[in-house]
Length: 252
Image (cartoon, rainbow, N blue to C red):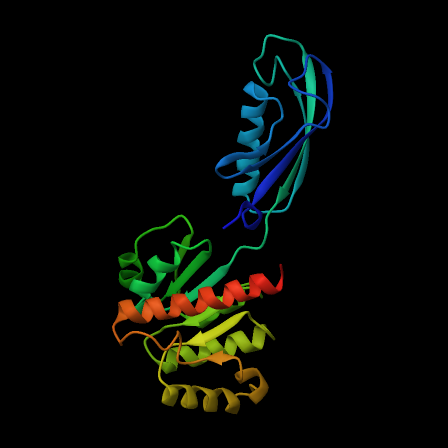
Protein backbone atom coordinates (compact mmCIF):
# COMPACT_ATOMS: atom_id res chain seq x y z
CA UNK A 1 0.00 0.00 0.00
CA UNK A 2 1.32 3.48 -0.82
CA UNK A 3 2.67 5.85 1.82
CA UNK A 4 -0.41 8.03 1.28
CA UNK A 5 -2.40 5.32 3.09
CA UNK A 6 -0.07 5.33 6.10
CA UNK A 7 0.29 7.90 8.89
CA UNK A 8 3.11 10.32 8.16
CA UNK A 9 4.49 13.65 9.30
CA UNK A 10 5.47 16.51 7.03
CA UNK A 11 8.31 18.55 8.54
CA UNK A 12 9.09 22.05 7.26
CA UNK A 13 11.88 24.44 8.22
CA UNK A 14 9.97 27.67 8.81
CA UNK A 15 12.72 29.84 10.33
CA UNK A 16 16.33 29.72 11.33
CA UNK A 17 19.02 31.94 12.81
CA UNK A 18 22.75 31.56 12.40
CA UNK A 19 24.05 28.30 10.98
CA UNK A 20 21.17 26.13 9.80
CA UNK A 21 20.83 22.64 8.38
CA UNK A 22 19.15 23.77 5.14
CA UNK A 23 17.11 26.56 3.59
CA UNK A 24 13.86 27.92 4.99
CA UNK A 25 11.08 26.03 3.27
CA UNK A 26 12.97 22.75 3.10
CA UNK A 27 10.65 19.87 3.91
CA UNK A 28 10.53 16.12 4.38
CA UNK A 29 7.86 13.45 4.76
CA UNK A 30 8.45 10.88 7.48
CA UNK A 31 6.54 7.64 8.03
CA UNK A 32 7.10 4.92 10.60
CA UNK A 33 9.90 3.57 8.39
CA UNK A 34 11.73 6.91 8.21
CA UNK A 35 12.07 9.64 5.60
CA UNK A 36 10.59 8.67 2.27
CA UNK A 37 10.54 12.07 0.56
CA UNK A 38 12.61 15.26 0.84
CA UNK A 39 15.05 16.36 3.54
CA UNK A 40 15.43 18.98 6.24
CA UNK A 41 19.20 18.98 5.97
CA UNK A 42 20.35 15.65 7.27
CA UNK A 43 22.63 15.19 10.25
CA UNK A 44 21.61 15.67 13.88
CA UNK A 45 18.74 18.05 13.15
CA UNK A 46 17.10 15.60 10.79
CA UNK A 47 17.71 12.73 13.21
CA UNK A 48 15.94 14.66 15.97
CA UNK A 49 13.13 15.59 13.59
CA UNK A 50 12.65 11.91 12.73
CA UNK A 51 12.57 11.02 16.43
CA UNK A 52 9.84 13.57 17.15
CA UNK A 53 7.88 12.59 14.02
CA UNK A 54 7.83 8.96 15.11
CA UNK A 55 6.50 10.00 18.53
CA UNK A 56 3.67 11.94 16.85
CA UNK A 57 2.83 8.98 14.59
CA UNK A 58 2.70 6.67 17.61
CA UNK A 59 0.14 8.98 19.24
CA UNK A 60 -2.21 8.33 16.29
CA UNK A 61 -3.59 11.86 16.11
CA UNK A 62 -3.71 14.56 13.47
CA UNK A 63 -1.79 17.16 15.41
CA UNK A 64 0.44 20.05 14.47
CA UNK A 65 3.52 21.14 16.38
CA UNK A 66 5.95 24.04 16.08
CA UNK A 67 9.36 23.62 17.71
CA UNK A 68 12.38 25.88 18.04
CA UNK A 69 15.65 24.11 18.69
CA UNK A 70 18.92 25.67 19.78
CA UNK A 71 21.54 23.83 17.74
CA UNK A 72 23.97 23.67 20.69
CA UNK A 73 21.67 23.07 23.67
CA UNK A 74 18.94 20.99 22.04
CA UNK A 75 20.77 19.24 19.21
CA UNK A 76 24.32 18.94 20.56
CA UNK A 77 26.00 20.63 17.63
CA UNK A 78 29.08 22.82 17.96
CA UNK A 79 27.81 25.55 15.65
CA UNK A 80 25.53 28.24 17.01
CA UNK A 81 22.10 29.12 15.79
CA UNK A 82 18.46 28.14 16.04
CA UNK A 83 16.06 26.36 13.74
CA UNK A 84 12.26 26.33 13.84
CA UNK A 85 10.40 23.39 12.35
CA UNK A 86 6.70 22.83 11.80
CA UNK A 87 5.43 19.25 12.20
CA UNK A 88 2.13 18.36 10.53
CA UNK A 89 0.97 14.85 11.44
CA UNK A 90 -1.29 13.29 8.81
CA UNK A 91 -3.04 10.16 10.01
CA UNK A 92 -5.24 8.80 7.20
CA UNK A 93 -8.02 6.68 8.54
CA UNK A 94 -6.75 3.19 9.11
CA UNK A 95 -8.72 0.16 7.97
CA UNK A 96 -10.27 -0.92 11.27
CA UNK A 97 -11.56 -4.48 11.62
CA UNK A 98 -13.30 -5.67 14.79
CA UNK A 99 -13.58 -9.43 15.20
CA UNK A 100 -15.93 -10.63 17.94
CA UNK A 101 -15.00 -14.13 19.02
CA UNK A 102 -11.62 -15.87 19.24
CA UNK A 103 -12.72 -19.39 18.31
CA UNK A 104 -11.38 -21.75 15.66
CA UNK A 105 -12.14 -19.57 12.62
CA UNK A 106 -10.79 -16.46 14.33
CA UNK A 107 -7.62 -18.38 15.23
CA UNK A 108 -7.01 -18.69 11.48
CA UNK A 109 -8.55 -15.37 10.41
CA UNK A 110 -6.99 -12.85 12.78
CA UNK A 111 -3.33 -13.69 11.97
CA UNK A 112 -4.20 -13.56 8.28
CA UNK A 113 -5.85 -10.14 8.61
CA UNK A 114 -2.84 -8.86 10.55
CA UNK A 115 -0.66 -9.39 7.47
CA UNK A 116 -2.73 -6.67 5.75
CA UNK A 117 -2.41 -2.92 6.24
CA UNK A 118 -5.16 -2.67 8.84
CA UNK A 119 -5.82 -2.39 12.57
CA UNK A 120 -7.47 -5.48 14.05
CA UNK A 121 -9.31 -5.77 17.35
CA UNK A 122 -10.34 -9.21 18.61
CA UNK A 123 -12.85 -9.41 21.47
CA UNK A 124 -13.82 -12.48 23.47
CA UNK A 125 -14.87 -13.36 27.01
CA UNK A 126 -12.42 -16.29 27.11
CA UNK A 127 -8.85 -15.33 27.98
CA UNK A 128 -7.52 -18.79 27.08
CA UNK A 129 -8.78 -18.50 23.51
CA UNK A 130 -7.50 -14.94 23.13
CA UNK A 131 -4.07 -16.02 24.35
CA UNK A 132 -3.86 -18.62 21.57
CA UNK A 133 -3.83 -15.85 18.95
CA UNK A 134 -0.25 -14.64 18.34
CA UNK A 135 0.62 -11.04 19.10
CA UNK A 136 0.94 -8.57 16.21
CA UNK A 137 1.79 -4.88 16.27
CA UNK A 138 -1.55 -4.09 14.57
CA UNK A 139 -3.65 -6.31 16.85
CA UNK A 140 -5.46 -5.46 20.07
CA UNK A 141 -6.95 -8.33 22.08
CA UNK A 142 -9.74 -7.47 24.50
CA UNK A 143 -11.21 -9.76 27.14
CA UNK A 144 -14.77 -8.69 27.89
CA UNK A 145 -17.34 -10.56 29.97
CA UNK A 146 -20.08 -9.06 27.79
CA UNK A 147 -18.74 -8.76 24.26
CA UNK A 148 -21.71 -6.66 23.14
CA UNK A 149 -20.63 -3.91 25.55
CA UNK A 150 -17.53 -3.34 23.41
CA UNK A 151 -19.55 -2.42 20.31
CA UNK A 152 -20.15 1.19 21.35
CA UNK A 153 -16.38 1.66 21.73
CA UNK A 154 -15.88 1.08 18.01
CA UNK A 155 -15.78 3.87 15.45
CA UNK A 156 -18.26 4.40 12.62
CA UNK A 157 -15.50 3.26 10.25
CA UNK A 158 -15.11 -0.17 11.85
CA UNK A 159 -15.70 -3.32 9.85
CA UNK A 160 -17.60 -5.59 12.26
CA UNK A 161 -17.40 -9.38 12.13
CA UNK A 162 -19.23 -11.56 14.63
CA UNK A 163 -17.64 -15.02 14.89
CA UNK A 164 -18.79 -15.97 18.36
CA UNK A 165 -19.88 -19.24 19.98
CA UNK A 166 -23.40 -19.00 18.59
CA UNK A 167 -26.28 -16.78 17.55
CA UNK A 168 -27.22 -16.09 21.19
CA UNK A 169 -23.97 -14.12 21.38
CA UNK A 170 -24.09 -12.78 17.81
CA UNK A 171 -27.55 -11.23 18.09
CA UNK A 172 -26.76 -8.86 21.02
CA UNK A 173 -23.57 -7.74 19.26
CA UNK A 174 -25.38 -7.01 16.02
CA UNK A 175 -28.28 -5.33 17.83
CA UNK A 176 -25.88 -3.00 19.65
CA UNK A 177 -24.19 -2.20 16.35
CA UNK A 178 -27.50 -1.16 14.77
CA UNK A 179 -28.44 0.87 17.84
CA UNK A 180 -25.14 2.80 17.89
CA UNK A 181 -24.29 3.05 14.20
CA UNK A 182 -26.73 3.83 11.43
CA UNK A 183 -24.17 2.59 8.93
CA UNK A 184 -20.93 0.62 9.09
CA UNK A 185 -18.63 -0.18 6.16
CA UNK A 186 -19.18 -3.88 6.79
CA UNK A 187 -21.37 -5.80 9.22
CA UNK A 188 -21.33 -9.59 9.13
CA UNK A 189 -21.88 -12.76 11.11
CA UNK A 190 -20.59 -16.25 10.51
CA UNK A 191 -23.13 -18.94 9.79
CA UNK A 192 -25.45 -20.49 7.24
CA UNK A 193 -28.32 -18.99 5.29
CA UNK A 194 -30.67 -20.62 7.79
CA UNK A 195 -28.85 -18.93 10.69
CA UNK A 196 -29.13 -15.63 8.82
CA UNK A 197 -32.93 -16.00 8.73
CA UNK A 198 -33.07 -16.68 12.49
CA UNK A 199 -30.84 -13.73 13.37
CA UNK A 200 -32.65 -11.34 11.05
CA UNK A 201 -35.99 -12.41 12.52
CA UNK A 202 -34.74 -11.77 16.06
CA UNK A 203 -33.32 -8.39 15.09
CA UNK A 204 -36.56 -7.41 13.37
CA UNK A 205 -38.44 -8.23 16.59
CA UNK A 206 -36.08 -5.86 18.43
CA UNK A 207 -36.72 -2.97 16.05
CA UNK A 208 -34.09 -3.29 13.33
CA UNK A 209 -35.60 -2.43 9.95
CA UNK A 210 -35.55 -4.59 6.84
CA UNK A 211 -33.63 -1.85 5.07
CA UNK A 212 -30.90 -1.97 7.69
CA UNK A 213 -30.68 -5.75 7.47
CA UNK A 214 -30.17 -5.71 3.71
CA UNK A 215 -26.47 -4.98 4.17
CA UNK A 216 -25.86 -7.73 6.75
CA UNK A 217 -23.40 -10.30 5.43
CA UNK A 218 -24.31 -13.86 6.37
CA UNK A 219 -22.77 -16.23 5.48
CA UNK A 220 -19.44 -14.41 5.64
CA UNK A 221 -16.85 -14.67 2.90
CA UNK A 222 -16.76 -15.57 -0.75
CA UNK A 223 -18.24 -18.89 -1.95
CA UNK A 224 -14.85 -20.60 -2.23
CA UNK A 225 -13.07 -23.38 -0.39
CA UNK A 226 -14.42 -25.88 2.08
CA UNK A 227 -15.70 -25.71 5.63
CA UNK A 228 -12.36 -25.82 7.46
CA UNK A 229 -11.32 -22.82 9.60
CA UNK A 230 -8.32 -22.09 7.38
CA UNK A 231 -10.31 -21.96 4.14
CA UNK A 232 -13.18 -20.05 5.75
CA UNK A 233 -10.61 -17.51 6.97
CA UNK A 234 -9.23 -17.16 3.43
CA UNK A 235 -12.71 -16.69 1.97
CA UNK A 236 -13.55 -14.00 4.56
CA UNK A 237 -10.25 -12.19 4.04
CA UNK A 238 -10.75 -12.28 0.28
CA UNK A 239 -14.21 -10.76 0.60
CA UNK A 240 -13.03 -8.00 2.95
CA UNK A 241 -10.05 -7.19 0.76
CA UNK A 242 -12.19 -7.08 -2.37
CA UNK A 243 -14.75 -4.74 -0.79
CA UNK A 244 -12.10 -2.51 0.75
CA UNK A 245 -10.26 -2.18 -2.54
CA UNK A 246 -13.51 -1.33 -4.28
CA UNK A 247 -14.16 1.41 -1.70
CA UNK A 248 -10.62 2.75 -2.20
CA UNK A 249 -11.13 2.94 -5.97
CA UNK A 250 -14.42 4.82 -5.52
CA UNK A 251 -12.68 7.39 -3.30
CA UNK A 252 -9.61 7.73 -5.50
